[in-house]
Amino acid sequence: MTNGFKGLRVYNTLTRAKEDFVPIDADRVRMYVCGPTVYDYAHIGNARPAIVFDILFRLLRHLYGEDHVTYVRNITDVDDKINARARRDYPDLPLNEAIREVTQKTADQYHADVAALGCLRPTIEPRATEFVLPRADGLTDMASLIQTLMDRGHAYEANGEILFDTASMPAYGGLSKRKLEDQQAGARIAVEAHKKNPADFVLWKQSSADEPGWDAQFTIGGAAVTIRGRPGWHIECSAMSAAYLGEEFDIHGGGLDLIFPHHENEIAQSCCAHGRDVMARYWMHNGFLQVEGRKMSKSEGNFVTINQLLETEVFGGRSWPGEVLRLAMLMTHYREPIDFSVRKLEEAEAVLDGWYRAVGDVAAGGAGCADMVAALSDDLGTTGAIAALHELRSEAAKGNDEARQALKASAGLLGLLGQTESEWFAAKVSDASIDTGAVETAVEERLTQLREKNFAEADRIRDELTAQGVQLMDYKDPESGERRTKWEVKR
Image 1 (tube, rainbow, N blue to C red):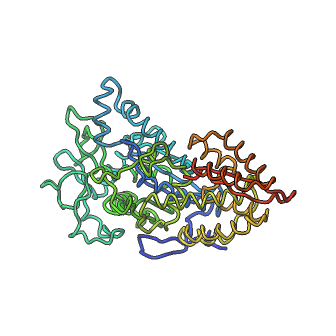
Image 2 (cartoon, rainbow, N blue to C red):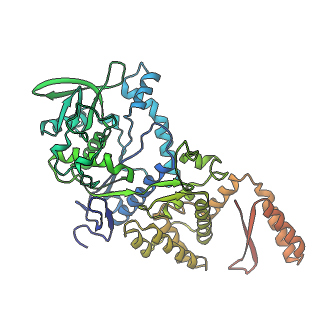
Image 3 (cartoon, rainbow, N blue to C red):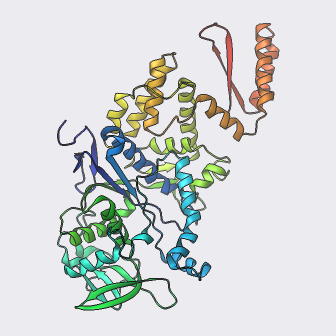
């Protein structure tokens, strides 16, 4: 293989085509993904990009080596609602410290939630507040990037704000394929008369005396000016991606909803500030998510957080293991819309139950399945990868140890089968508050009745356990040939 190509093909939103993935430097593959705004707990829609790009991260590490992939996912902790709450709740603290107090709880919860979904931590996870003003280490910051845009004629000051001049970039709109004259404003404020063009978007917002802000130094018209304010949304990611991945890097990811205006404006800022035609070579976007056939919203009554799914009974009358949520997401290709439903979760859980029974308590190890890696290498074809795992499961269920190890290793590349069979089913039993000792006693008693050919009594015990939600599975011991029984809680 040459030029760093290792068989991976991805759909590039920029070109609207599937392309060979050829990194700029195969020894340092670089990916940036827009992370959470830590104002509140992450909802299930936020889980999809976390899982999708975790799969890509795992695959890149598999293909290029763990030490040769850098994954940056930011934390957005610059937000007007966050800033206002920080100033209200911690008036005696410096702004950055107050914001960290407000956002630390939700950031910690996000980390716990996505870890429960089987997601690896990114290589680097910068906070936006740490990149507003010039840094001692010289890494790219927002204020300096804004100054560069003004110096190059791509930004201007008006009414105390600094805005990006979209007309200064002929290629503006290349990602979203929108013509400039058809654009709507990309800023988080209404279109106002001081803009040169309705599509111009804010880089630096002025803060009033009672609003939180940073004292940023700018040179405007040859004069040094201090504007107390806060950054616009889009400049954050341009600064943090450049800080850790450079002016041009390999992959930029996020949800479809970010194509315009967020990613379009990132490209404009970064390309114009650095004098380049490209910010990221490949742009990848996951599809939308709806819940039980409807768009998720609080007004619809179907808004659910990751934490609620993991720990409460608000969805389907029960909580769900993180692996079930993860597999349910992966059963739909990442670019397709997904209907998140109780039925889909039940289907995913049944699949995992079957896989865990097949691998048993086999230790991790063995070679991964080449067919599964090939499926993933075709634009993260998780549906094909799952089909390959089903094939392995069929062989593993026949007692093929090589297939069991391959199933365990291959599922691990998807972030699945992280437990042993015993651990998986024991956790489900614990969640269901079943008296395990009583169940074990009943199971042994049933086996005794079967050996003594008291079939009616054996059936009565089985029916009693079934009524409690306990499912029995008889099998033959491969060494002794005797009847044995496994059991699990049937939800």
